[in-house]
Amino acid sequence: MRAEQGKALGSSRFFHFQFNLFHVSMLLVPMVDNLVFLWVLITSTTVISAPLIDYRRDRRAQEAAWKYIMISSSGIVFCFARHYLSDQCFPAQRSASETLYRYQLV
Image (cartoon, one colour):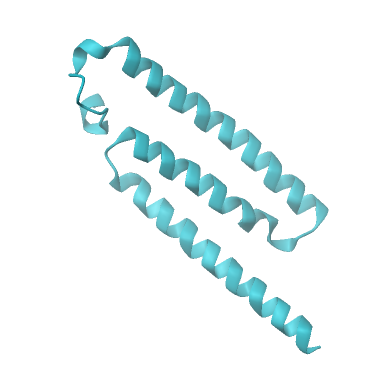
């Protein structure tokens, strides 16, 4: 009985820690201006939210977490490739020492 309560308490702590970490990463996303750091933060929200999906620890939750990671990560990779290619294809719009900032795109 005591071991089950400790296990439930530990998983509850893990859930709340992951949830707060996810929340912080979601709050940081609109605050950054550098597109590479933005991509890193969006990827971190994907990776951090996967254990929240798999919280129940059964087969269906694990399958849903893996599907979520695969689908969202492929979309994030395509988005990053598009930004990288647009940065490489149009270098005349910026100097070599500048990084690509979001305010420059708008």
